[in-house]
Image 1 (cartoon, rainbow, N blue to C red):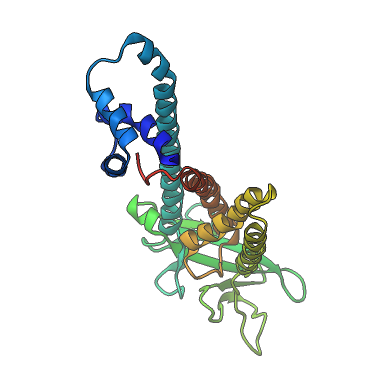
Image 2 (image 1 turned 45 degrees about the vertical axis):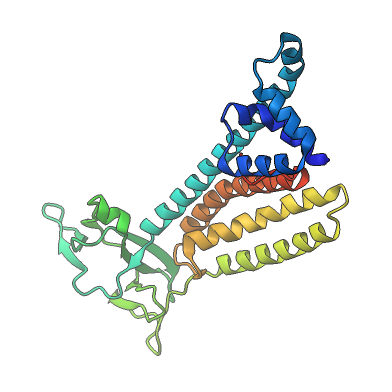
Amino acid sequence: MRDCGIIRDLLPLYQEGMLSADSVEFLEEHLRICPACRAEREKLAAGPVPPEEKAEKAPELERVRRKLRRQRRRTAILAVCLALALATALFARLTERHYFPEPKGVISVVSEPGSGGEVLRFAGNVTGAEVSYQKAEGGGSAVFLSVWWTEWDRLFGNTLSEMPTPLGSAVYFSPNNGTDDILLWGEDQAPGGGIISLPRLALVYYAVLALAALAVLGILALALRKRKCGPWLRRAALVPAAYLLGELLVLGVNTVSYSLERDFVLILVTALFLYPALLLADVIRTERQRRKLPETL
């Protein structure tokens, strides 16, 4: 039987008590139905192996030990990669920007003593701010100010107290929640309507492309699984799978973003750790299917 070779490889480790409970159960169940392996087990348990026979079995035992070391090494790498991916996703969630919906009680313009200039002063719960510029009608520039807080900054007591007053034809406060931006001072650039700072949709398109790539590569890998290119297609499909999992861990189901560069970098880093984890999981699964070994050793 094919299992007999596996059982005889495992017998020395069984004798030394080095197998897991699942492997012991697998081995003992086989011993109950296989007289030849049972005799080998009794022979092994009878006493010290003669030097000649021990020398013959040494390569087999060493081969089994190498397999165990390789499996444990792969499991350790898999665990480290998953831990790093989860740590990156947790960092992304803790540093997620929570934008203030209105400037009242959040910012104020004060004169800077000595210089005669003005600065923006923030409330104590503000941990970050960003200024972006757009060309204004009639020349000059329109300034859009976003103000936020993060769990990470609050956890470590980081705050933003003030920043230079931005210069422009009009300065708007952007709540980044789908409502109109609020004019702080200057000439209104849309007197007949409102201005809304819209989120970036690039991550939505990236997710759709990754999902399409996963579907195409998955179908090809399934159709060509018996060809030489089958395993390579399956492993290539893990690339978009890692990206989709990374985006899910970093952003959840909300794929629109007001901080595209930050979110995209964190998604890529998470996916970079997830891909080798998925690849190792696929290698371990394939080897177990091929050799029909129990789940754990």
